[in-house]
Amino acid sequence: MAGNTRNPGQSVSSRLLAILAVFDETRPSLSLSNIANGSGLAPATAHRLVAELVEWGALVRTDSGEYVVGRRLWKLGMLAPDQADLREVASPFLHDIYGATLATVHLAIRDGDQVLYLDRLAGHASVPAVSRVGSRLPLHATGVGKVLLAFAPAEVRERVLGSLTRLTPYTVVHPGTLASELRRVHRDGYAKTVEEMTLGACSVAVPIRRRDDEVVAALGIVVPNLGRDRATLVAALQVAAQGIRRSFH
Amino acid sequence: MAGNTRNPGQSVSSRLLAILAVFDETRPSLSLSNIANGSGLAPATAHRLVAELVEWGALVRTDSGEYVVGRRLWKLGMLAPDQADLREVASPFLHDIYGATLATVHLAIRDGDQVLYLDRLAGHASVPAVSRVGSRLPLHATGVGKVLLAFAPAEVRERVLGSLTRLTPYTVVHPGTLASELRRVHRDGYAKTVEEMTLGACSVAVPIRRRDDEVVAALGIVVPNLGRDRATLVAALQVAAQGIRRSFH
Image (tube, one colour):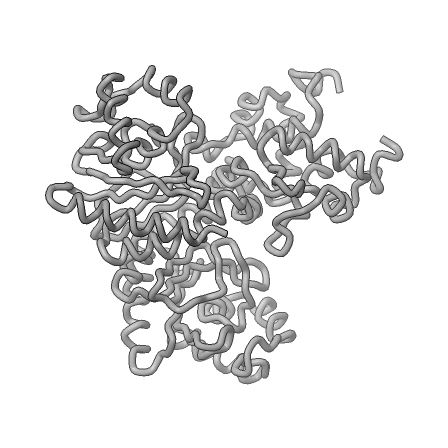
């Protein structure tokens, strides 16, 4: 194995996983040398393992010669029950809200210190939003993110409050201001944002609880402005969240 | 390595992939011995590799002691461009159709000899359908499936026509009848089913073409009955399919 890798202590299986780990939202398409560099593998090793992954269907070589994630991993990922079950249970409720409002509707969970979008409904009448299924955004600047942050363990909240980045002129970047807003979210059971992530987009969001009361996700809606619709939107989201809770096994 | 596996010629990396290959729609949750049996690996090897996959986040051990696909593979699978790009481009059009009809809307591609559901929109007003995102159904009994079959290579069509299984009393299982129906689908540009997959559910579907005219997916809608709405639904689907085609880069 010597000379075969820059990290000789690494097992073959961990080298295979190191290749997969190089792919993420910011790097969905990579050349062989990107893969070798990103995984810390010698080019020959990367070449051989990438060929195995392509043969299996985990990766696909594009016309440009770069590698991307293949259909087989998509199908495998769809089996993830935490994501699939929550989406499956929540889906009809999300569609009911979409049908009634034609606004962008989001289902999201916390993934470390970010919000991860599990589902997103949007038509041509909806406000453009930067979210995408599987993509992640900051917790502090999105409606679903604020809900998840308000109900997150204290250490997550402290970490996030310690590094608030500005995304628009209206992003709340003062830790004390956001902390008191999160206490209000916790108390009132909903969060809002006003152009804090994207100019021209406002949002409200509510927690989704399991039967044991634990907050497992957030349900949000993005609209051009909140105005007098806020109470109505919050009520619709809360009805849906209750329905989702009752639908859990 | 001798004695470490029942298939000593297999590389470590292919053993890791053999473990992932055991998981599918019909077996989303597996015990360690299921995994060892399914992958043909010795229990000790399976145990060690499963532990690596759990540590990486590809698999998760449930409370019952079985293993399921983890969030990390879900996120990785979401990067698959064939699936993600098509969904992303089609999504607003699907939502427009859903918003107008509140019926179940499907986006599907052909995956070998089956139809694979990439997206599915359904609210509480929609007809219950057996589809699920990432799940597969027979080509010959679904609207989207018939479209994909009509535009599939001849050898796929011959293979599928050679083994038509009955799902309801209305499933078309006579190869000659289905073949002439598929010629009609090819000519008219849409397919329909009348309770052929599920009793109480009818469907219409149209092809989605790329700019080079190749059929890459099908767009369908499921309703309780077709009756006089058929022409309207087909027209709505065709408008959406044209819109999707124009949205491809």
